[in-house]
Image (cartoon, rainbow, N blue to C red; front, side, top):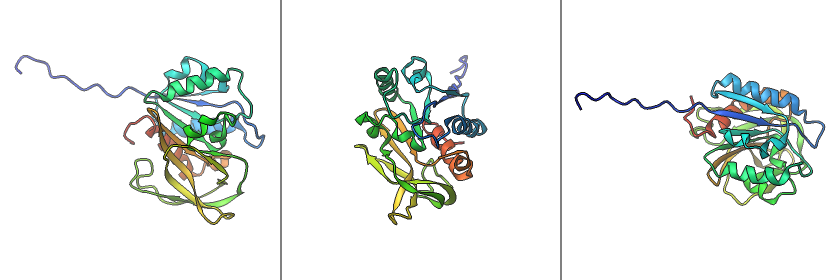
Length: 232
């Protein structure tokens, strides 16, 4: 209409990510190194306004945790946390919003005493896996938003298969064949939990494994996709 100033659509708000770490029940998982590497992967992607590391899982109990768009878990506690009740309640509150959660490696086995956590992550690693070594990661659907145009690749990592299974439907986006069971198992999967998108990759045992380009790209893409934006 004459005399009216055309409206311009506002650009999407910049997204913020938090890497929650600081504890691991296996001393072969060096969280200080792996969390720093995950931050480097996300920073290099330039998809987020900010990526911060919080070196204490009790941070989940804070109001500040709820201000982030996506949380990346890089910890695995064996026993209840100091603020465990509030942590559980706040995580469920976080997942009740259009947020994203990404678990890397054995973070899918955190909270082993909390039955609902396996439903949140879809698959929760227990203790047994193929011996660390090289294997092929097979992309299930190259047209999926996470894996679009990605190719199968070789990694050198642990191959998890000893998992508890949750009650949500999962969508594997990458699989690998176990040398123990001679069958494919999910190496990266997604699911919906309440209003949140959850991504679970069993890969990423150490910095060497995280620096495999295919694995690093999967982590970048799953974390970004969890914010429900279109991949760049």
